[in-house]
Image 1 (tube, rainbow, N blue to C red):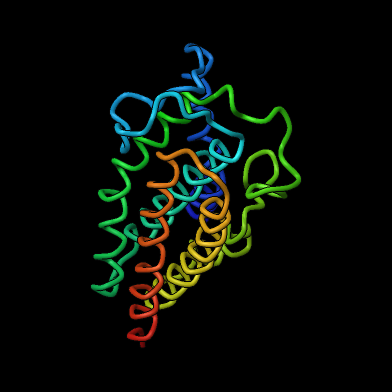
Image 2 (image 1 turned 180 degrees about the horizontal axis):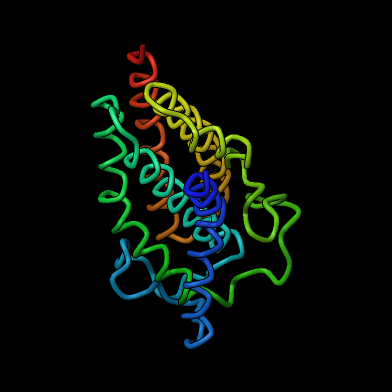
Length: 212
């Protein structure tokens, strides 16, 4: 029982832990809102393009979504007797997210001056709260508890359903970002995130449909 509680706590606090690590780095470096970071996914983006609060909102929210996704996948992979398709999907999440998170965290650091002083009440991140825990699709404590306690095939089913809800929230956020006037690097990243989320929805539905 203690191990299960620890897993739930790890899942619900994963995003705060990741953000705290980035903020420690921010405290030691000066923010620069005018330039995309070295090694970013969009080195061709103009260095003179201003970074807005919505750009920063996208970066911060996507870090939270991706870290939560990884934590969910890692929790699934600790279970026994998994469906092969669900196992393969969960295994691939960490590897495919590594480069994206590296870029997002670099932007998070160098664009720190664009972070709004207070959590926004309007715009793409309106209502997300100070730690993005209220973002659309983020799992509740009870959903996480049920997931941690679940075994095959219920574990895979809960994993798929939680990620589908999270992807739907991510798609809604990215769509709002793209409907605005995002920084070129954000626009490119958002387009890729949108395509990935839409593809994942189909993959997850296939996994769910195949479960006994």
